[in-house]
Length: 200
Image (cartoon, rainbow, N blue to C red; front, side):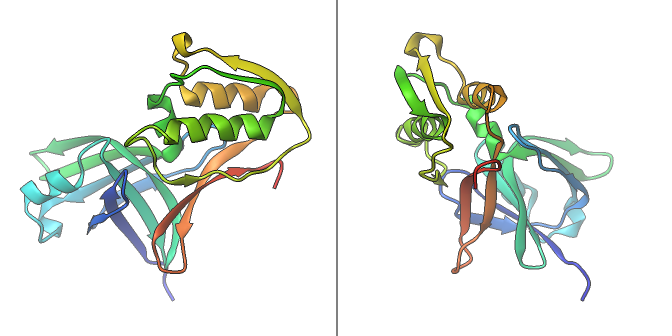
């Protein structure tokens, strides 16, 4: 059977599906420790939806896009930019993997770890961010250990981006690679899982 791609647009915080829209000229990729990129284009004439509906379904920062390849989610991220081209009657979208959300979130409560496993430090930081009202993307963070204990302090006044803190942990001696894996659960709801590549 030929490979079939579907592009599903959903609310970033709730994953409520807005629409499935036809895209062309799609490219996307995945990276470790930082967000991979997505680009795609939609001709207005290729959809039954009105321009007004499309604008509502694709608001940057508030809309996620999932790539379904023949029934398997192979990419997921947040739309951060869109452009309308009146000459071609098309809309271009730029998105980045869910790791990009951590670039927007800052550590606002002081956290200190003394001789704590590095994966537990990462979990504590992500859990702290997701505990903020309307701050959770429902990312499952595994309760794992790596055998590497570290001492760190993240002061509230530094307002360090969560992405920067995780990147520093990944680059440290005996650090770890990580990314956010996306998939369907048994009921075809979207799931997000923080995955440690070196320790699972």
